[in-house]
Length: 277
Image 1 (cartoon, rainbow, N blue to C red):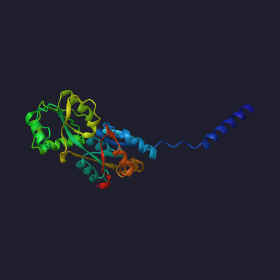
Image 2: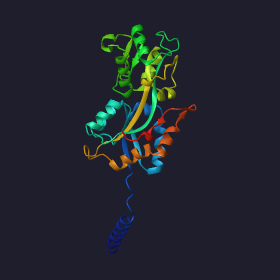
Image 3: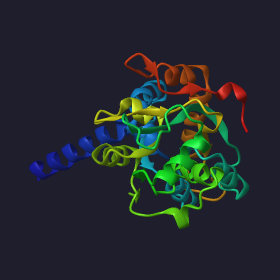
């Protein structure tokens, strides 16, 4: 009996000690649906540790084309979206999936192609360049993935007066992949491609490719951030997600974005001072 009594006393003491030790809080985390350009350019690897050090919140990134990222948010599979297709972002807000969109940063698109430039587009404006590409039926790689970059490419063909559905042929390669894989395909084929400058600067497998068209105002590429509306999806981590949005547009977050460089060249430029839109 003494042995049993001692055993129960020991168990009781252990239980009391366990109750006295405070349970460790679950680590905070959010899911951000974003573009492949922010992931593949290396931006997130640069800024997310700074945000976690500041707040203790871990950010899990799901890198998709902009259209797919917004669809994931519509399903409630993300807490925050950071994308770059203004028309699609405005529609997302209008539909009630976010209450507001905030400017975060911008960079630009560039038209990449072989140094020999058989279509003769070097230095041309965007519309003229795309007309020449269609006329020459020069090998062209499209992401074809409903991304912000793909949307920009489709607009460029339309504004150049090219009926892409009718003009498509063997020269036009629709890969349905992110920016990095699409650039790899262009490099292997010696083809032209529209790319965001950030991913291009971080891209290593350039082969014979170079920047041929840049600087046209139509190549401007703004990024916006939105908290997914918790009224649509109660599972959204609104407090933590809003903390991330607020940090991105704060002076500290904007400085972190501006501080990301490759080879001394800045990839993204802060734009939060323009205010919420």
